[in-house]
Length: 382
Ligand SMILES: [Zn+2]
Image (spheres, rainbow, N blue to C red):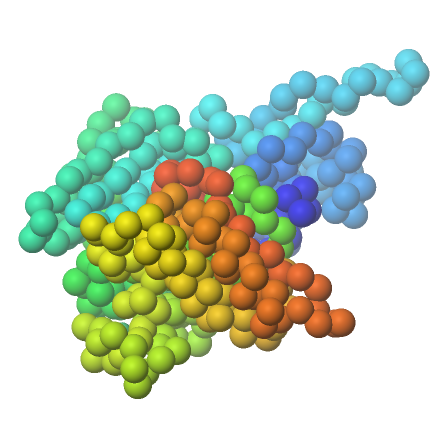
């Protein structure tokens, strides 16, 4: 699954130009076509890229020269010559040595995490800012963190700043974030004015999902769920993330499968997903409980989770459900119970088994994904 090259793009800006493609549009398209083949970790020669894209030798050379100049790719080793035929062709790969990205994760409670990364989102430097229990994150905290991360940086090498937020994002404006206590915060403009580089603001779950897609096990079709303080999801169909009509695709935390008898939620409804299976709620229930009870709580959560996932799995015919969450909640008991329930609900002659698995991308998956969003956006813009 993981070796299928990424073929999508990020529709972060809804509805692009619909007029006739200009030469610069064509050039930009060719550029992302070639970059997508190399990203994250492939090496190809110009001739190989020509065969894979169907572009002429001249077009490939032209686009490659531009990307080499810009620092997006570099020459990195060479192909062995075929039985003394011609000279050895140089291989090209993504250049991790020159361009830099600032990545910020706002999805963790009482903590702002930031990193300076290379083009593959590998963190080169970390900073974080811990907040008191009653302190809300504001734009100033983020500006200070970016200031520290860029203190010794040649700003000419900075491609952009990517921020992962828990909430609904429309065109760089965080229109609603319960976790941050924000409504209509134009973080993009604040940061772009201050640092004069492009800023991308994206939903945190989508960022984590992109890390799973590029560096984990996922293929081009995936339902990704993050269980933590709250619950969020993201969906990838043929490598295009589903953003949704209200830009709120994946906001499943306050969908209630049991609006009459479930526990009361701060949003006013009963039985919201977040009130039943978020890590916070499950941990509260497990305090002081014996092993048997703890296992029962987690098993029940797994079953509940799978019941909720059965419909999108069937609706979209997706066979990969990936869960990101803390190890004391998303453990083997959770996954086994979830898988059994999902099988019971979905298996049929025409529906192969959809598997529920744990994301293995580690604690920095969201930071890394926010950097990936910056790279993809950069390729679409220029
Ligand atoms: Zn709710």
